[in-house]
Image (cartoon, rainbow, N blue to C red; front, side, top):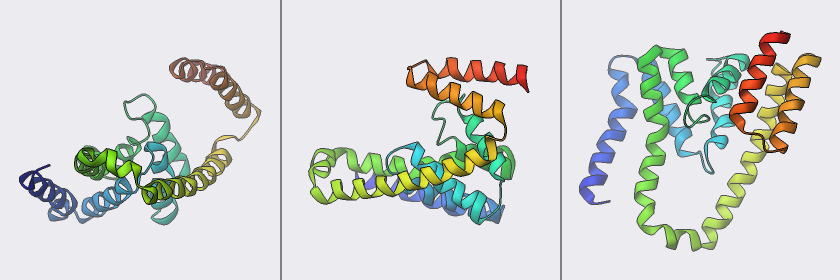
Length: 194
C-alpha cells in the first residue's frame, strides 16, 4: 500500500476508534474494545470467541453467557458467523448504529494487516520467529476455547434433551453431514421436543 493509502487507513482508523465518542462515549468504548480484539484474532474467527466472551461477559458484564451463546447461534445463519458475533454485541448494546460500528471496528485491524502484509507475505511466512509466534498464540487460544466451551456447556447442556441434541450434532459433524442440514434438523427437533 502506498503512503497515501496508509494515511487514509490511519485517518479511517482514528475516526472509527474515536469518532463515536463525539455523540456517545459508550460507542467509543465499544469500538476501541472491538478494534483491540479484532487485532488479536490470530488464526481466524474462532479465536475471537473467547476474547469477546471474556471482555463483554466476564469482565464488563454487558451480556450474560446465555445472551452471548444466543448471539453466536444467530451468527451461524450469516456470512462470517463467528466474527459477526461482534455485530450482535454492538446491536445488543447500542442498536443498529452499534451493530454497524462494531462490525467495522472488529474487521478494520484485520483489513489493515492484510493490506499491509500481502506484498510481503512470502517473506514473512518463512521467518522462523513468526512461525513460532503463531504456534504459541494458537496454543494459547486453544486453552481459551476449551474454557469457553466448558462455560457454554454449563449454560446450555442442562438436561437429557440438550445432551442428546449435542451428541447427535457432534456425530453428524463427524460423519461430515452438511452444517446447514445439522442446524436445520436441530432447530426443528428442538421445537418439537422443548
